[in-house]
Length: 491
Image: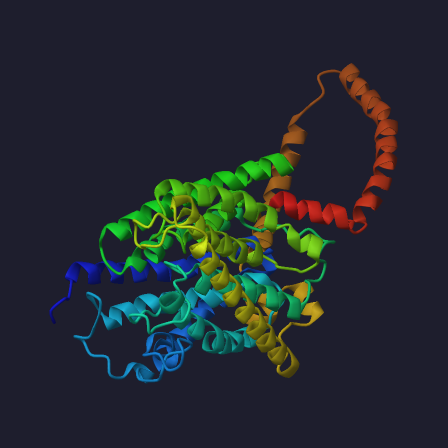
């Protein structure tokens, strides 16, 4: 191997890449548990489709556009690495092979469009979603990754390398980018059938908790691995990731208890993800105490932000906007306050004597990425909707998108019914045998039993009459306030 190669750094980055890859199935479980049972497989498949499409496009031209030599003003890479040509076994990025670096960055490109899928759960055509992934990573993600992640001694990406916007692991390029794109998509596709009327609670909170745990685990590779070396910066990024996530979980739960009166498992899972999102851009720039502050702020603010969809009238199904766009913006902006200048960056935030300059740079990065992502995502979604159609028919959505798009269902309820049918005769026979075995002790006992039953009949009849109006009222559709409260309470 050439001079400068580090076997330890290479092994660390390869393991980190594998951890980041696990995040996409983790996201699939997280989202899959949050939807209703009839949409579970579709939600899982939307994330897995990104694994396939983006992997192919990355080799064809994605890596070259993102990390090839700059072609114009820090906006996009050239095509020198088209098809990964010209990259040899001994070529290095820092102390690791270019192929290891390319694999690591591929995993970021895969999960970013998968994050968007939560905004349009229950209602997007699967084929149209695949087309959107291919177009979106080409015209949105690959250029933004070049802006933020490509460094070339001041001649790289125009945000990170040329203007000093700090984004250690993807607060702008991944989370704000995906969150704002999710907003554009849910505006184009419109609201789900029954939004604000029908309760749309998560069908499997255990799946949600499993998914959030896998995301938390994989995020250590996401953040610490972005140091691209097994060193102190990676260790600090890992510590910051853990403490910020824990703080955000607590912050969300406290807000939830004060606002809605309960600590929910969905809130705990969502708070953890909000903390992971917020610390992503900042994990290489702040101290552990700064990370705790970022986590607490992100947990509480994101918990409040997820209810904005009811007030503003957009149907962000799984809170991609409230968690990823808002959380990414919080973490990116707070670098301008909490950056110490002594971790992985030399820039200092306002609280460490750096003045407002870095805060201004961070605000510029947030605004530029958000604006670019929203406009391009909206145009792409609108074009797909006008040509091949992006949304399934209303009857498909009501019946369940799994059967229509995948000819499968996540749960075989017919097997449960068949098992009960087989068991029922035996249960009825056992009950009959037990009743026949009970003989009255005396005629008085029988008479007393009959009299008691006769006395109960009028009371039972009256109770049935009293229940009828309540049953009829329950059959009416839930009003806006009730439906909204059920989902907010679940959140």
